[in-house]
Length: 266
Figure 1 (cartoon, rainbow, N blue to C red):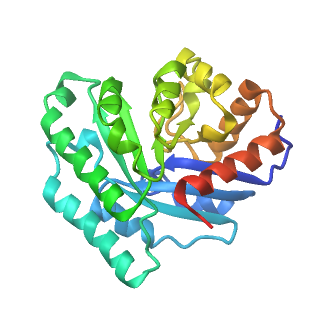
Figure 2 (tube, rainbow, N blue to C red):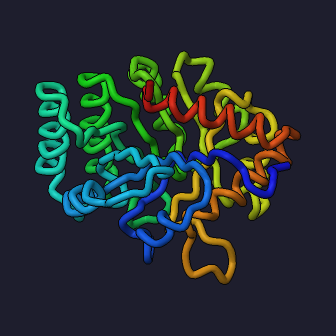
């Protein structure tokens, strides 16, 4: 179990600018905190970069085209914006680094989303190619479309690291993706607490070196919660400790190591 005041937490996936009162939440966090915040629109990216942070908060930024945005955004303009960020970083080593690309992927959860399969394909392949070109990790969102992960496994295994955010497949599927040579990490949040059987099995049985924690804040709420808070990462860690049957210090140290390996943080 975690101690009352734990040392380090890593949130591998959330959306900081969409969290109500996110600045006060970050400033009130009383432990060392590492987080990867994903911007899904150009204005979100710009807002994300202008956050002033206390010294115990280490924020790493990602940008991507979410599959649910298919049909709502100009794909070419957003891919061009992303490549401009990546190319400027490569040329001038600017501070505003894109630490990861995504969340990219497929979402066939509703008929409306399915109607935009072609756009989702274009968005996913565009981001996957940029991840290959610029040697960046890729964050994947996938709902009701795990077959697409296996279709693209040959290219995914060439990407330095892949985060399967809020993975909802079985442990057999997760292991099969790893066996295909993908340097994959699987992150989990409140589905562990919601008694999702696939998620619980994955957290129990996947090797600890392939696990990460996430809140997906402000999303992935429990019943009667208005939104997910950044501090909820502590609850996620508690759940991982229980399912992995590991001491809190072991979980903290290993998840920090995994987080840094995913984003290639030295």
